[in-house]
Length: 431
Image (tube, rainbow, N blue to C red):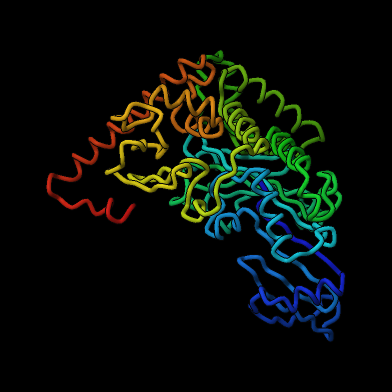
């Protein structure tokens, strides 16, 4: 859940301890003029340990820590990262340096989750319009990435709360599904951070803090305005369709935001009421997926082995072209998969018949009973939104059916593109 932390201490003894620690590697020295006095030069010495950066100033130490990246050997943050995973990484930091975490104040925090979008990720990011009354603005740093934040009278971004939403699958296509959506909450102000029950790094060993983070993610996503051009609106009357199409014009919301105080809120309520009449619309689908994923992340019953994440495992299952990586069996395989591994999901299917090559009804029931996290991920990937409200047996049937179809489509594509005896370069390169 935790993506980034900035820690601060003014404790001279602790600063000296870290500065002389043999585990830290020197990175750079920087001299900068003081913003308020050009005759004063501020010196910063930067060191690092496995991607954790220690910035030493004359009277303070700032530590830049990315627990999710650290968990994955600093390769990516594209998989699931549970509350238990976060706690274990912080415990590892404490053990490695043998320090009291109460001496390290949390002054910056980012937390969020990854889910598979029910539509093309590029469309989803495009549809994001506002969070509360703050417009989602394009983040130049990443493709298909947006941020929402309040701007003060001087045009500066408010640091109390920033909402980030972007295409994680496009950022890390080799480590997750291309339609992976990341939703994050970021704050640089102690007032907000304290509302999570967090003052120091030691507080992040408390599971209650993660429950509050999960609740906040849901609360903040509920405030997001999505201009949904994806949902079928034929069920609405012609008058309602015309009204809804008017709301789908971004310029209309620009006008609302610049009118009297309540105009934006009233029209947002009317828009939500209209889109709710269509049934299972995009916002509702995403809310359901986010809530289900957060229940898994909060529970954290199955903690992904770190060594597998460094190989790019995505939660329990990593699906990429013809190759899969499975965290349970620690196996990577392509089209020549062993019979105990599903060709499509990469999951262990040894609980099924010996000649099984795909995850089927019995395997799905096993994962639902014994590894719910795994089941929910497969459900998100292979169950059409049409069947999300159906009974369990129907869901099992449809998931298994879609896995079989995926395998069949892959075989047809391979036969069409690659003639017999022709070398399949994509398989050899694991693309």
